[in-house]
Length: 133
Image 1: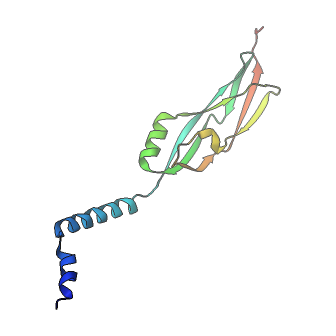
Image 2 (image 1 turned 30 degrees about the vertical axis):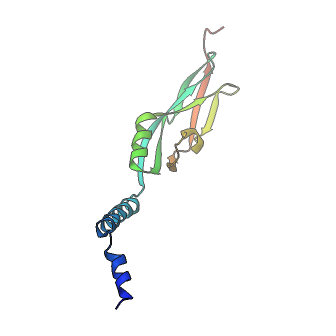
């Protein structure tokens, strides 16, 4: 029986610390495992910047539906701070322009991923500004 005494002592020594460590470990494990990513969709406006010599007279559609996946906190923060997708068009050589909404235009923080963008293309009609010199 002398050999079992160190084993018994190993389990019963500092029992309070061992139980506390077990409780903390179980709590952390459930917290990490229970952290599911959420999926959220929002409509975002298309904001177009043109040279001052031209004006935009049609954007079809003027908003797109963006669906993202990530933690609820990141999704909420992103959609509260970012309401538009911005495009700068410097060289206007056509009256009709079609742009593709790419994932990179959303400038997503680490932890958010694009599920879908609908529609992917936006058509614009641009005309020279009258009276511009």
